[in-house]
Image (cartoon, rainbow, N blue to C red; front, top):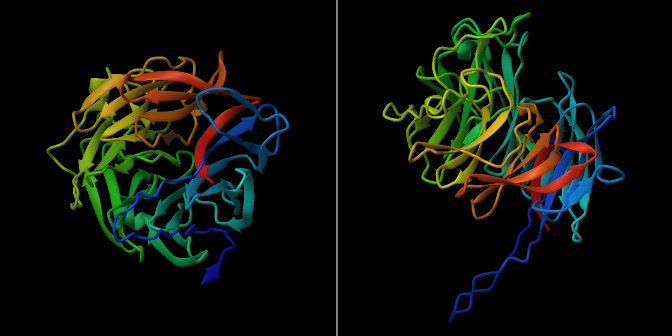
Length: 403
């Protein structure tokens, strides 16, 4: 086994049981929000990590504040109350920097080490699962399972992505999601050959590879042909909700030689709990219900409701960011009001967070006219409200830790 100095810790607590009554423990943990912001007119700095107690008001700035993150691109994930900052090395090894909060709420570096540059990263049980997906050349995707309790790589596997695709192209994983006791990894089919590396001749199909866990053995592929591939590059498109059902979001965004070539609508399809097939009785045609708009990205509120980021132009993969709320149970679609209209899809935060009561999603929107703000989107009113202002940079991620 290869030991990595991840600095991951597990906070253990205990309580005594009174024979006559049982008290409900009251959490005394405080919340601190981490806002990653790309500084304006800086080179060699991916982001500054800023901390705040509130997202609904006030302002913070990158000027003279925050933890500097080097490189060009950084991606973030939290697990075990730790914050991971992953450098995307564009084919080269990338640094992984781990932080936690001190007793006073200060963001503190725990470790800094080199790893493979990966395109997929998510939490599974007590692990952080990383997947390196080559877009050309090497035909094998590498999967690494890092156990947070032991701070070690305790499992590694490879899968031949050309054989997995089985159509002369290659499978390119868009993400990996824990569903029950397995890992479901949606993928898109890509040519993997210059000059049209991400182009495909198979735009109208959906695929999800099912892996056992923790041994990461490929068990089967779930297929469908009513919409396009699930998710997109660095864009998760599969979420399991409370009742165990998994919902798959397709932007139907495939291209060939730089032009959209899909014929199926952007839609949501379902894998019922306990099954490994798409439910043929369920098809949520989001493109139709939205008046022609494609899904870009989704965040789960809870109770079957999702915040959707949509392509602003109807029947096209272009346009500014538009927000909507979709109820996958009722198959309803509602546009969100109150958000600025001049925010590019690339100018929205990659990480969003949901409130503990599942009523609000917090998202960073970088408006050309208004500046960079955290907006809170209310699930009941479908209204976005401007909150925390971030000065000196553009918001790329919002996360939270407790201390």
